Length: 131
Image (cartoon, rainbow, N blue to C red; front, side, top):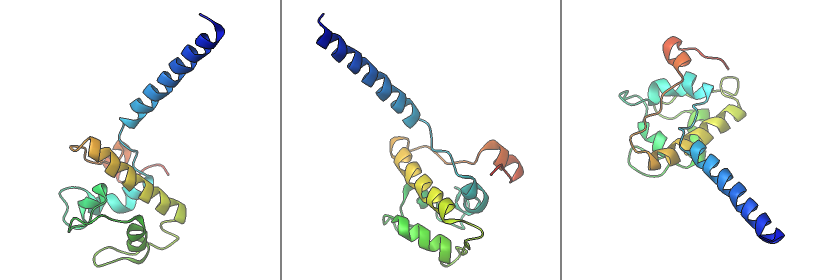
C-alpha cells in the first residue's frame, strides 16, 4: 500500500469509530434535567391527568405540534392549570434545558416508541436530587 492509501484507510477507520460511538450514545435516553424532575414531571408523567403527556412527543392534547416558544411561554406565564414559574424558580438557562430535553425525548421516542421518561432514582425515591 502506498502512503495515500494508508492515510485513507486510517481516516475511514477513525470515522467509523466516531460514528459507532455516536450511535451508541444516541441509543441512550436523554437525561432528565433536575429542574424538570422537581417542577414538571409530577404533573406531566403518564397516568397523571393534570398536565398533557404529549409534551414528551412535542404535541399538544389536540395533536398539533408544540413549538418551543409555546413551552417557554406556558412555563414562564402559566396557562389554565399550568402554573407560572418565576425567574427565581426556573432560570432562563434551566428553561433552555427543559426545552432541549423535551426536543431530545421527542426525537428519542420516534425511534423508541415504548420509552417512558422517568426521573433519576435519587429523585424518584426522595423527591429531591442534587442540583
